[in-house]
Image (cartoon, rainbow, N blue to C red; front, top):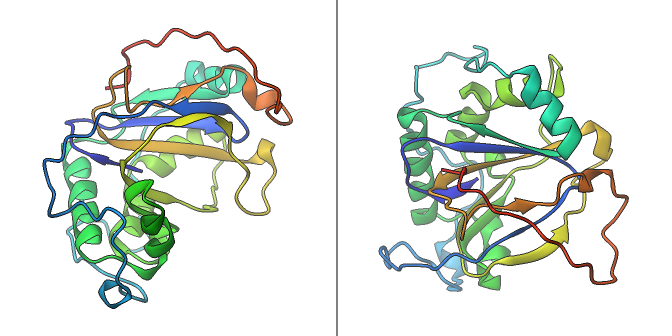
Length: 235
């Protein structure tokens, strides 16, 4: 999940093993009070489970199913063929505002698990497995349309979360790379997903994926020239 601010959210579902890169964003320091930079002070970090006490859209009750979202056969076929599919307008304004509020709260109340990533300076705030430490993000996974999207793409009635990652304000882009798998899960049994809370025009912000690279066993160390056309669809 990446932060921040647009009226609708974009979801990219990616087969694990697909290769891609993220262009560098030209950062505008509009909120210096929130930007943590590489400041690390152990006394400021919190431990345990945190609860921002943010109202969940739709007021779901425990054990309620996630919000529905219809996935088309064309989207399933695209994912299988290309290894990546763009699903627009998954979240409405209420869900997006919820995620933004949860993210702002988390930055103001940093968790100890964020300290290694923040110290690296790559992001202003970055924390893995945030759904296990922040009730707002776990409720997002339980009740938002995200689970319905992933189940629809995987054509399954059950999904299991291996890990998640909150990333705020990347300070540099990423070159072509192929992520390792997280956890004891085979590539063929896993989906990666990316939800943006930012506008993502073609020249920065939006990931670029090499179609069909999910069929590779690994990205070769030998440099390879890759040509692609970036389309302004990720907004």
